[in-house]
Structure formats: structure tokens, C-alpha cells
Length: 144
Ligand SMILES: [Zn+2]
Image 1 (tube, helix red, strand yellow):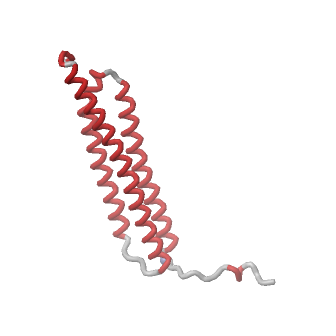
Image 2: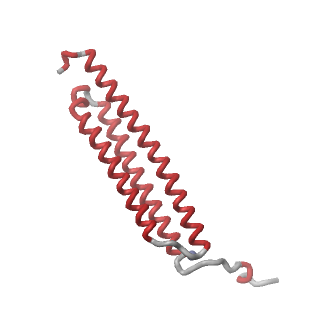
Image 3: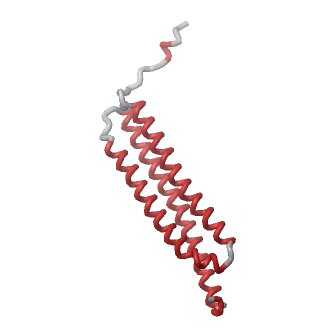
């Protein structure tokens, strides 16, 4: 009954298929790590600082918001550079590469949207805290 080798159909591939797939995996993993790191840093910081005294919190608050903003900017830059790197690889000619390239872009875009939402949530949480702080300050004008 047939040989083991005969079962694998000849796929349409090019020399770059494996390489491109690996590149995609690396880029995706890199990007996800960057996103996760930023998100964790941002939420850790906001948790920790929320627990500190109001006075301390106030002192750090503006800095913190600034940091969040620059972290967001940096993230957008990194995302851009990863996207550029992806585009610089050139247009693939084989079907498998084309399909993979498309899937890669789609999953990057999905991830982008996902983490942008997360950061957006974090940002509005920060804004809420800022407003809380302001209203507390308004109610206790003697504080400063
Ligand atoms: Zn290929």
C-alpha cells in the first residue's frame, strides 16, 4: 500500500516562504511584547500611584500623564517602524507568501486595534482619576 512519501502533495512555494513566515512570527511576537510591556507598565504605574497619598499622587500626576502620552507616542513610532520593516521586504511573488503576507498584515492590524483599545481604556481611566483628583482638590481648597 503506497509509500509514506507519496502522501505529501507538492505545495506551491518559493525559497522565501519559510523565511517570510519566520519573519512574520518574529515581528508579531516582538510587536505583541512591546504592546504588552507598555500596557503592563502603564497599568502597574497607575495602580501603584493610585494607592499613594493624595499629595504624592498629585505631585506625580502630571509627570505620569506626560509619561503615558510619550509612551503612547513611542508605541506608535515602534508600530510604524515594524510596519515599515514589513513593507520593505518587498512584494512576494508566490501564492503562499502572498497569502501569508496578507494574513500577517491582518493580524498586525487586529493586534494594533486591540492594544489601541486597551491603551484607550487606560487613558480614559487616567483621565477619570485626574478628574477625581481635581474635584477632590476643589472640595478641599486648603490642601495646598
Ligand atoms: Zn513563497
